Length: 333
Image (cartoon, rainbow, N blue to C red; front, side, top):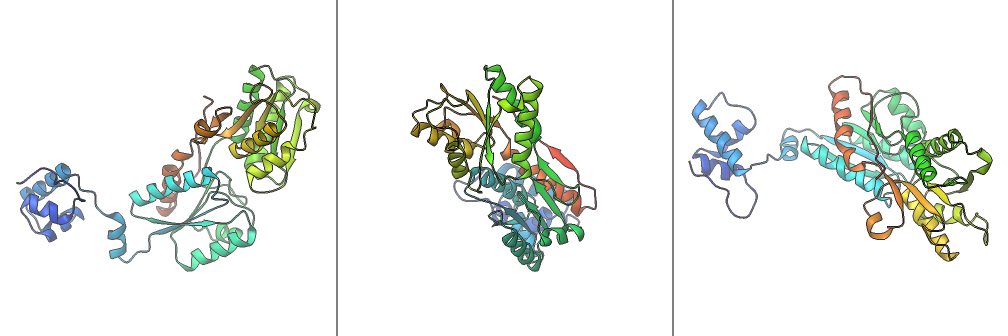
């Protein structure tokens, strides 16, 4: 048998057939698990060639030839947020590994768009839905009631317990409080969207509860909020509500990295030094921070690890099992 990877190009069935000295159809049957028409020696020769040449079967192409759509829809909001694109990328890769294609929709956190996309995806006979962010809507309630395959990430199912992948946001908020407290902050602030989601509300609640447990009265926790869905603008607008000319709190939690970026811009305009004048902690841990925000302390959420458990939850549903919650650990580096 001829062995050794050819230089350049992908390894194909023809490459394997040539190396094992068999026909392409024989290789195709063995790759697809149909070994009854080949001798044990032939099957072993083909398997050896596959291993040595590093052949990777095209799962997506195979699925399409079998006449299956094998499409999963992901709905998320505000893809300009690196968090959303990171989760989408990780999930797409995990789906591709099992022969599925992912289509991506940006709802912009609007009920009407969410329902339009859910209806359109159902018409396309998608085999499952992933909602990275969601809001209550008639279309979502209908899908949940029909018990269609759906996995929620970051924000839980608003209608009933079910498949979920995320972190403990209450504990993440508490971890931010512990960090500020350990650095001497006794009159903290928290910055968040006025029309926030369950995620941001839990982070604020966890932060305030831990500060209270540490002995900080609620009256000494400054809360700065602003409306909107674009967190950069929310952070900037919320920071502008803090008194101009007066010292800022010595430490603050921004419930997302992008809110922290907006706060930082306002601080610079007011000639405040970050972190010397105000220590800022956020929750997300974007890879951009080391490049553009070395002044920011961010709690690391493993968004790159969301993809595999999301897909495993879908597979559990497809196989008739009962999905549950997967709570991934965050870290404070």
